[in-house]
Length: 133
Picture 1 (spheres, rainbow, N blue to C red):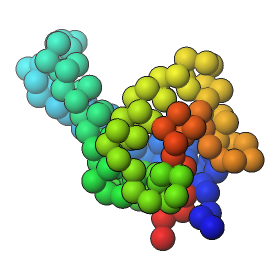
Picture 2 (spheres, rainbow, N blue to C red):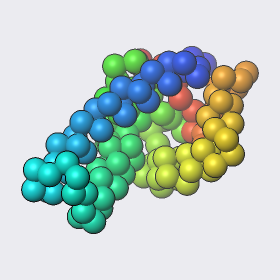
Picture 3 (cartoon, one colour):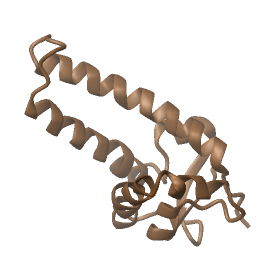
Picture 4 (tube, rainbow, N blue to C red):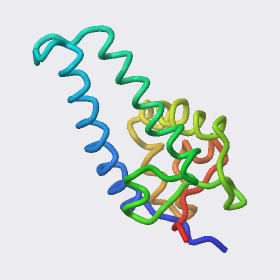
C-alpha cells in the first residue's frame, strides 16, 4: 500500500512551488511591462495565468504527478490506484478543486490533515498524494 503524504509536507511543497512560480512570473511581467514595476498590463496577466496552468497542471501530468516542489519533498499526485494522473484529473484537481477548497475558508486544504490525508480537491479529482518511489 502507498504511503500517503500529509498536510505539512504538501504545504512545504506548495511554498516551494509558489516561490519558484512567483519569481518566473515577476521576471516575465517585468520584461513584458517595459521594466516598469507599476505597469501591470493585460498581457502579463494572461501570461501569468498560462504559466500557472502549465506549472500546476501540465508539469504534473508530464512528470508523474510532480512539480518542482513535490520533487524536492519526495511526493507526487496519483490516481486512486497509485498510477499516473490524466490531464483531465489534474485540471479538475488544480483548477476547479482548489478553487472550491479555497472558497470554503481553506477548509478543503485542511482536510489533508485528516485521517485519509486527502484534501477536498483530491476527492473531487479522485486523486491521492503519496510518497514518490
